[in-house]
Image (tube, rainbow, N blue to C red):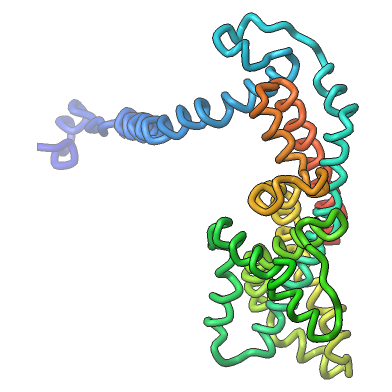
Length: 318
């Protein structure tokens, strides 16, 4: 019998029935959830520390030592050299040549890739109404194609005697050069190949951005008498600013790590005219100059961080 059913002096003697407290049960559930979260996070944390954070911090420390291949058996017996490796890298003529080649590739390649990608996205969004999915797949196909297959195609295109490009130029009376063996034309050839291979990714992102802009924006421009170019320049491009920022940052970071194209097409030649910083760093690792290679990779990291910062400053929403 509960106290609510008692009346008079009996109820006063028994008093209110104590309610069970929910705090211990709730804190126990929170504790189990926390433990489950830590258990689920633990594999990622271990793998991240072992294969990402550990090597990054280790290579940073290595860049301040004189570690070479002979020190692999006694890695903690190396000597600290401060910033000597960074000074040595910056005073290396071949490294400066590789830095110039990388800058050349980025300055020409990134804007060209973005312009081609934006043009293709506008074409698919406004012009091509039939087989749109087919064109999307076709443009994106080079992105997912193996670099080896891409190299085979472009070696056929750029072959000096029977290549597709020189054959087409021959039809209009132009004697095409030996593209990959020329110090002048090897880098533009690799830029052309990189644009063809990479613009599909940016195109998909631009297309998503264009399709997210309401049609009423263009209709308002038409009512105000603005032509197609003015509507695109003053209405569409400002609304695409976040998309342009994202694609330029991603493309810029990828192009600064320019490696696969010269590795499979020219091996950095002729006469280092297509040697990139990433490829030269890779070569130094191969030669056993681990500390020097680590310092080169961190110099490249600093350039990537500075370029990304500038892109955010220039292309952020105002």
